[in-house]
Amino acid sequence: MNQDTNSINWFEIPVSDMARAKHFYQVIFSMHMNDGEMLNMQYAFFPYHPGNSKISGALVKSEMHKPGMEGAIVYLNANPNMDEVLEKVEQEGGKILLPKTKVSGEIGYMAFFSDTEGNKVALHSQN
Image (cartoon, rainbow, N blue to C red; front, side, top):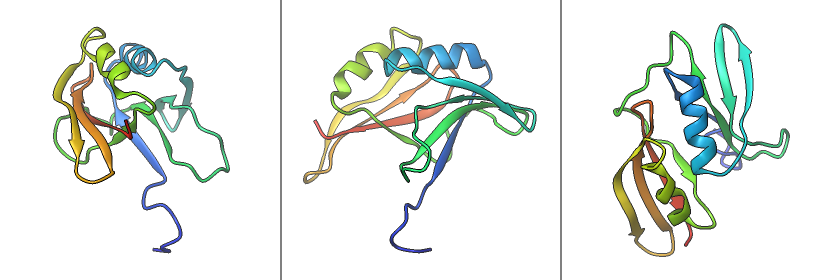
């Protein structure tokens, strides 16, 4: 792998109820997600700007995508204020698994939550 590129270029969070999951993420992050479909998979895309080499991803519903608490953990960007995101998680049907926690050095803060679909997801912020 070229060391000048990102290790990750796309992520997918599995969902079983797209409307419920899309509502959850749109509310906790105060953003809009666009819908799409390809190869018999339903998508709700996190905001992105094609061609800028920044990482993005989507909620995905398909036979191959099964929500779960095990496996890889995606850290979503909760800047500028993780507290605002965490305040909405339980109000919208999720559960905080690890509250905002200071990471060593100047890395910032992290937290874990479970979403409405049963996925374990993480947050990261500088403040």
